[in-house]
Length: 390
Image (tube, rainbow, N blue to C red; front, side, top):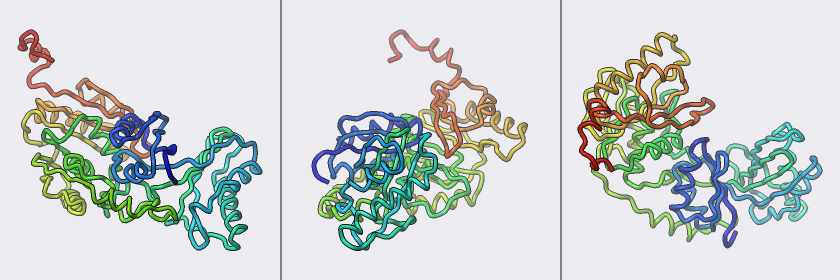
């Protein structure tokens, strides 16, 4: 792979613009925001950097086949005619991941099977030997996307999903996805210049991702391997140059991660230690409903229970308590909360200044930001002199 090529970075719904901004900062050009993805132009160096640096990307794909097909015969023919020998050789392993939105093709397993057959048949005919299949840790991961009759086949340069940073070996049962956590922090506007609070920290993902952002540590720095490192055209010298040029920033700010569960706090600390940011985070065991008043100007992000296993009255009372704590303890700060329970969010009793629709796994959520003014909002403007607000 030489020169500029089309690249597609996959992400979660609602984080497309955040990802596009990240890609722009890395030097991507021709950026086009798609549904749960961003298309852009770049070279091999940018592909490597995208895997290492992008905080809100799930996978970095390089499309190699774009074609209109009518049936399985077309599918097999279009895939087989591509020169796969550039990227896979006998003795290497292969896996195919398929996503369908088509009335003609309705079984993803069948499409994956035909794609795999076309690739290994071509290699066998050229060399006399076939690559083998390994769905857990392949040398080459191929991504197939079929929308109506439009076929796109891509090389997956990431391998394991990029949310698997490598610092979290355990969780508390319902961990916040690392990419979603990073996206929430970026959407909040926090850049490490003020205090950051994660009062329902669980396994610590929000605090850890905040520390990585504050210290400019690439999220992929802890990964043992990316998919592109297994490719026959892998440029080791280029990769080592990129890796050696990583520049962490010193940071003296304050991140406070807390939880009512002491085992969760201990787990959050262990995960932060694996990410080498435990010295940047203060861990506390605190019941959110009894949270002490914090200094103004902070950013607070909450990921409370959504209430799937709680009675209605119980969850509504809990969200009412969240609203009370926000007013009593977080006055003068920005507070963000994510939840899939839209009815429970109403019991917070405050009007959000901003709203985003995001997904936590399969759950459609609202991510809402509140400006917790000191005193009332009315008094804030009443006491301001003309021209003082900018």
